Amino acid sequence: MSHTTIVDKKHCVDVSIAANEVAEMDKFEIVTREDFSDVTFLIEFHHPQMARAAHPGQFVIVIACEHNERIPLTIADFNRERGTVTLVIQTVGKTTREMQQICQVGTKLFGVVGPMGIPSEISKARKVICVGGGLGVAPIFPQARGFKENGAYVIGVVGFRSKDLVFWHDKFKDVCDEFIICTDDGSMGIKGLVTDGIKIAIDKHSDIDEVVVIGPPIMMKFAAEATRTHKIKTIVSLNPIMVDGTGMCGGCRVIVGGEQKFACVDGPDFDGHKVNFDDLMNRLGRFLDEEKLSVQKWSEHCRQEKLKD
Ligand SMILES: Cc1cc2nc3c(=O)[nH]c(=O)nc-3n(C[C@H](O)[C@H](O)[C@H](O)COP(=O)(O)OP(=O)(O)OC[C@H]3O[C@@H](n4cnc5c(N)ncnc54)[C@H](O)[C@@H]3O)c2cc1C
Ligand code: FES
Image (cartoon, rainbow, N blue to C red; front, side):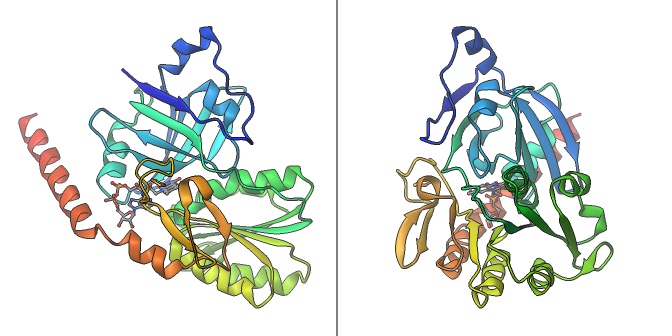
């Protein structure tokens, strides 16, 4: 049995469910799986209502299989004609590694809740820099496309450790007027971090209206510092630990401008110059011991299962 919830946000398009679509909803069948590297993979699943309701910047909460935990994942893309939603997942712990194993074409996700969160505001900015690093590369794509569709001059800046990990190079080139790839080892694009890419773009263009950044907290922190002195509006998408995703549990509490906010309902986008990133990073590290133990137990279970075969 599968479960779904369509969360109706004020910005969402019609999410009403036609009777003949209820059967469809019971599916969440994975129709595409693509591996970008050993640690990053894409799944596209069938869910016409979700695809209709989705907007850039929103996320879903996924339960990959029964008894699995719920994890938040950003909607990296959606296709209303195909009725599909795309997620790009980076393996960091037990659940994402398990998903890497079990989420194959033809299998079904057990449950999906969403779209959740306030959609990103695709403003009327004339010139923007869209920055993605690590697990932020995929979710920055629909934003870059949204700005392009709004007529903006879009500069894409994406960061990877090395050339082997680069993905969606062509997709970004299609929607960006300028595209800067940054790799830690210099194997592709410029050698450096996304902050170096941001600096190059700002030095070349004195008229940047807005910078949007998605990636690990440390990256967003330094990206926001890089734009602060230039007084450029900077939006970041926060990824605190989430449990219910509905504003009830307080797990995703973040501090923005000295005030407490819940990223799941007040965000996930916030003014990067006001976010307390040190508090966010501190809270993300609260369960490191439990997370390590969980991976160990799961790896041992997988080893035992292999021995049985
Ligand atoms: C709004 C939002 C959108 C997200 N979008 C994506 C996405 O598109 N692709 C993707 O790969 N990941 C995304 N994440 C992060 C993803 O949810 C976590 O990586 C995942 O929950 C980790 O589960 P795990 O069991 O594999 O690892 P765990 O063992 O639980 O954690 C390993 C490490 O990952 C981090 N982490 C754990 N749980 C979370 C969490 N709920 N949120 C953020 N970081 C966490 C911590 O630093 C932790 O030390 C998003 C998180 C949020 C809040
Ligand atoms: S995840 Fe529970 S309040 Fe946001």
